[in-house]
Amino acid sequence: MSAAWDVRYRKGVHLPQIGWWLDAQMRTPRAFVSHAHSDHLARHPEILCTPATARFIHARMPGRRTITAVPFGRPHALEFGVTATLHPAGHILGSAQILLESAEHGSLLYTGDFKLRPGLAADTCATPRADVLIMETTFGLPRYAFPPDTDVIALLIAFCQQAVADGATPALMCYSLGKSQEVLRALAAANLPIMLHAETLRLTRVYAQLGVVFPPYREFDAREVAGHVVICPPHGRGLLSRVPAVRTAAITGWALDPGAIYRLRCDAAFPLSDHADFPDLMRFVELVQPKRVLTLHGFAREFAATLRARGIDALALGQTNQLEFSLPT
Image (cartoon, rainbow, N blue to C red; front, side, top):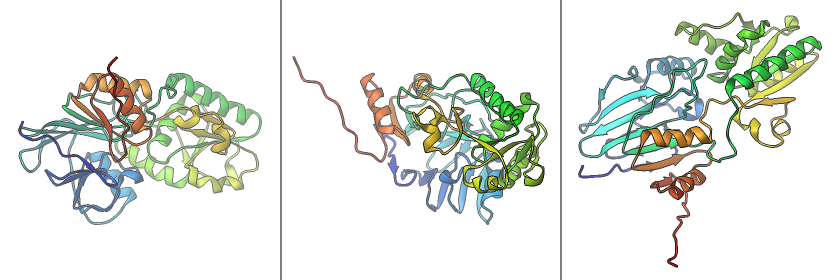
């Protein structure tokens, strides 16, 4: 290797040596898109992503563009002798990490949003080795250690069943792409009829076209909502004003924060997340075995400091890093 990777950050990761951006939030000439959540998307004329993500991009952001859809595990040649391979990130269906390999620069792995825990509506996360790791660290503090998903789902189902038994309508607030489909599959054991917000319904149908199997569901109808569970994105809360008795629950990793139900304006909160928690962030670094780690999002600076305390070369991208040093005694 004659030159290290040059990694820059400005509303997305920029790799000027090869002319590509990773999850840029502004229009760029060409970008890798790890998944189709709006905070990772922009109207790039040229996009590299997985086939599933390409389907969601078409559904969420119509328009003309060149999309190169590469399946997981298939090497794809970029410019300057660089090979790109996409690996599952475990975040939502089709979400991908990108592994860049170059004789000149070595290997670089960018995770995008990811989680190690197996999900009900996403591919299982991979952990390829890399010299440089650029990783998402949304929950990068030790206090964010999620309980087992099975335990959270059991509590969520009990919440829904109790609400219906009391004559109320349980409304589960979660993002329309990814989290809603995870929750919908989790509710299969509840044996309760389910209604979906129109936006959630549209994206769930794309999931179904891609082969994901769900329990029965229908579009939200306020006239017939009694006895149903409603799955609704947070911004669609307004439709619930037509429902006489509602019990709302937020489905998010931030449910672990004290006072979450007051900040999220809901009756209950369940820590079911599509991001890695702190133990899994640490485990991911151990499995990838990078020589250098660059952190992004959430508690990026704090997590980088945690890694440095363990002897790992780590910095937070796009932030001022307070580097530690020791004095001789």
